[in-house]
Structures are given as structure tokens and as C-alpha cells.
Image 1 (cartoon, one colour):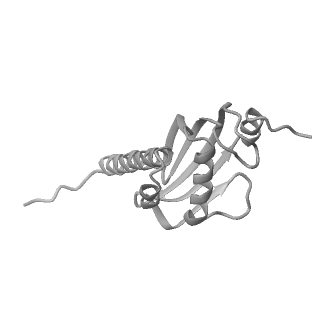
Image 2 (cartoon, helix red, strand yellow):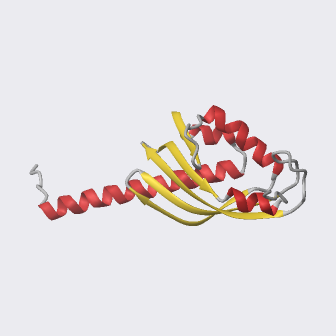
Image 3 (spheres, helix red, strand yellow):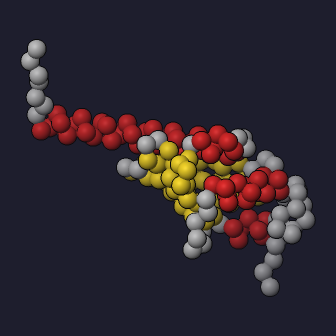
Length: 157
């Protein structure tokens, strides 16, 4: 049986198609993470991340591990039981997936010493996921926390 040798163009096209297929899988992995988060399926969320997963929030100098992030996630969903990540835009480049999100919810329970207000919140976030071998290794998230806090009655002095 004769082996067909690819031309340079065919080889480049095949490589491009493989990269695009991987980027599509990376987007699906990222969407699953958001879905697991909003459904509070935290073990499933854990299973999509590597053991050395790191979460970088805002300008924090130190990353959080998944074990450190879970209590923060649970606290947030207790305060805002209907908290939801709405994906406004998503794209991938290589191992990275970038999302523009609107985060929404209702302030039903105490949050950072702010008593429940029953106010609706809606604010923006940009998140960058790093995916390696179909597993999330890092998330970098920047959220408009000031907007969210003012929506539940927090005031600056």
C-alpha cells in the first residue's frame, strides 16, 4: 500500500483544522465549567480541573487552589441562590478561552456582612481559562465588584 505524502499546503490545512478542533473542545470545556458552577455541581467542576488548578481573582497576588475556591463559591451562591453566568461572548486562541460574562442574581442572604436586600444584581466579568489536555489549569477573572456591591446597598465613604 502506497503512503500519500501531503503537500505543504495540505499539511498546514490539516494542522489548522486540528488547532480549530482543539479550540472548539476548549470552549466546550469552559462552558461545562460555567454550567457546573451555576448548578452547584462542585465535584463535576473539580473533575474538569487539574489537581494543580489555580484561580486568580482580580489583582490578588496569590492564586487560589480549588480547595480554597470552593468555600468562596459556596458562600456566594448562599447569598445569591439564583446566581448565573451569562456568556455574552466567548472565543479561543490556542490553549486559552476568553469570556465576557454578565453575572446576575438576587441578594437573598447575608453577603460580606451586608444583610439581604432582595436586590437584583447584574455586573460584568472577563474570564480567561487555560485548558491543557481538555482540563482547566488556570482561571483569571476580573469582575466589576464595585457595581455589584453598590447594587446591594454598599456605599463608599
